[in-house]
Length: 518
Image (cartoon, rainbow, N blue to C red; front, top):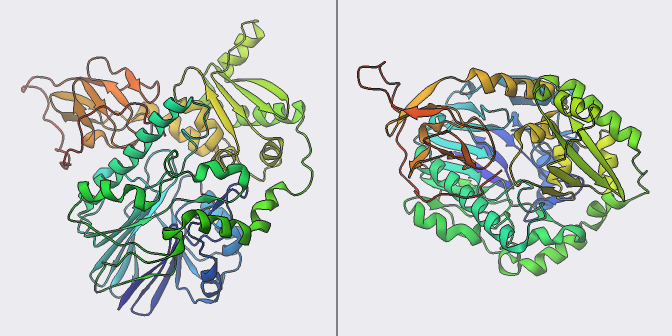
């Protein structure tokens, strides 16, 4: 007998033939005490802590998956299935907590859990460090992608139950200071992109059933209440997008669960569970905020020491030194504002030389950060990615173009192995694919998605992951960012043999997708 119990968000407890596997359990606030699981799953915490677990799987280091306060209370002799990331940061953090029994799995590597049970790791093969897990359990195939985006060409098929993200988990666009009309347009584009990605995953895996998971979080701090708006943010609830999914995937059953609900192994269809979080979401959220008052208020406790110019300079000087390959040919700056103070920070050798020559670099990005959040970053209690995900920061950019180098520095600069890999991949990925009379680089220059599955129409190539768009004539980036694409006409038939044909993907739309920037 196999059972899959949803613990809320991306958490699951899986049982099969006496084996018990715990997946991404999240119960405590994340990202500067800003994110909370929705609906509240705290009532499940005692039994998770008291449970006997043969295996533990933590997909990646984001705090809504890597709940350190919970993990610190689990038995240390539990075997952990660990994605083999290039930085080893997840391995080290688990080892620091005492989890030394680790099974490291690379992309598409399989580990036998029991006589008729295996686990296969799937990695986001771009510069990001995310993972998903395919469980084969006595004939039942459960694919947990949480918020991971493996290459579409590497997704398994014949999946019985798919759990994957449908709601956003990013600060773009809602943390930016766009005018209302622009914000509405960009929010709608991101939500459409999320649904597009989900539908592709369902179709490629042949999923019989889909379980909405990995979001949305909710924001209990009243300062962040505007991000609970289900219509104006990238954080919809399933009921807000269910009709779109049903229209795109009419043959896929939806398993709607509340925290604690179990999906039995003999059928993966389930009813919509009743609950106040569905029938009275505003009242439910108000009560939830009051129940967890002490936790969201923890962010505001105590006086925050004001950051100094010397500390800010030292912080960015260290990032520059750690990430010289990333910044070697970079000429741009960052404007940072906190508590009435402002800093203009040149980044990269070219920017530094320009400043020395009295040619100041005008920052394209401005980040307005509360002193308390900046203090957490400077003290090492949070990274820039955690601070940005908290939605406590506000951003402005002019021109309104995604800067991959700057965002990579902020997100991964403290783990320079990631930024160095990004630099190597920019020049090393020369594999091509032939599509619609074109030869184009196979891997998206932004996040490494397999462009075998790109949409090509009306002179535009559109990436299926984050929907960057390029001209088929020039390779210039039309929307999303500024990185060009290598693309040209397919040579005559007498030329070299074409590469293996990509797996066909049913077309979702040929309409351009403006502004879908992650």
